[in-house]
Length: 132
Image 1: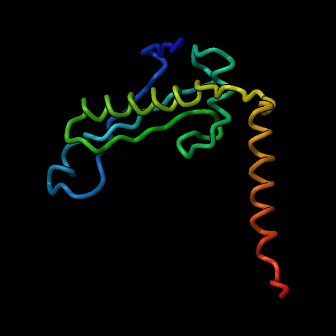
Image 2: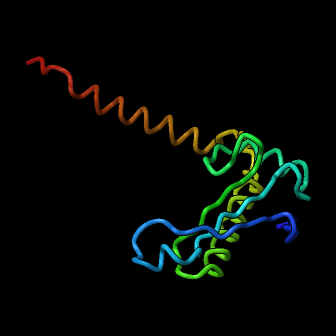
């Protein structure tokens, strides 16, 4: 990982969580909306382009990643969860798969292939009609 996020590049706001929870849900803002502007970040340009080209519903048209975390009961844990998900998204975009290099089959593998084909052909030749 050759990139590091600056703390001031990430903004977050506390919002009320959805779902079950009784009266506590109506009183406490424990869910977190995390926003990260990719274009204004200090990430390398190559990584920015790869991140903006990722097809993800959390990425807006303006190039802002919006992550909502509400699985935990405390705001601190939800913030940690959102930051981990942001790091995972950036790490996924940073991964560059190795390019495949075409190789030729070895002479021995070519020979084994041809011998197998001859053997199969001979087996199938025996399946013809029997002439008495």
